[in-house]
Amino acid sequence: MNRRPVTSSNVASIGWEDETLEVEFVSGHIYQYQDVPEAAYRELLGADSIGRHMNQLQGKYQMMRVK
Image 1 (cartoon, rainbow, N blue to C red):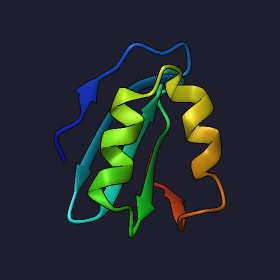
Image 2 (image 1 turned 180 degrees about the horizontal axis):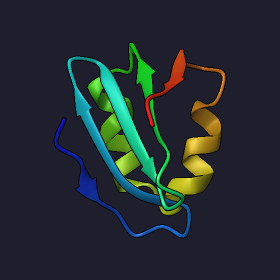
Image 3 (image 1 turned 90 degrees about the vertical axis):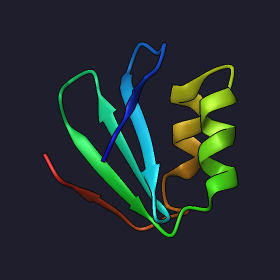
Image 4 (image 1 turned 120 degrees about the horizontal axis):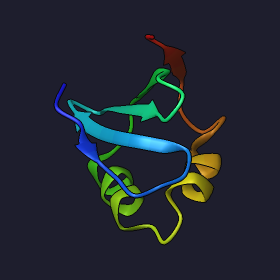
């Protein structure tokens, strides 16, 4: 999946494809969130604080660590 770099102290890059949101954290860990609508991805891209917005996604979508 292609991810785009973002400006955040915790998140390095994010990408979205086929309702899967992929987040690479500065730590190097990568997580995928399932059944995420494109609108939620776009909101994340435009958020003032990506890290704070990510906290709102916790528990809302099924998540798995891929790296």
